[in-house]
Amino acid sequence: MSSKKHATLRYTSLRASIFLACLLVFALLGHFGVIPVAGATGSIFLLLLAVIASAPISYVVLSKQRDDMSEQIVSGVSSIKNRTKQRIADQNAEEDAADDAARAAAAAGQQ
Image (cartoon, rainbow, N blue to C red; front, top):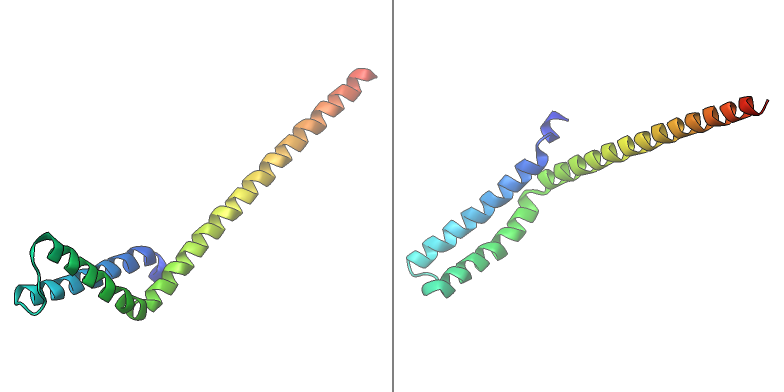
């Protein structure tokens, strides 16, 4: 469990790192004239290239981290769901006890 404790943070930081690496590669290619870059449109073009290139790389390279993140999220949601069910059951038990006490008091008052 300890290796999966920060799985979401690990996946997100690795994904951002892959994107930034792709952006750096494309920026260098643009700087040296391999990719034509002109003005703001060229910068947007470099960003789009980095997004398009980093997505499949992340999909392939980070599959284990993505699975760990998924397990972490499912575990967290299950924990919240179980705590909510227990809280509802406790509240229902309290309401039943209060209702039973009120009925007992009403029955004792009628006698």
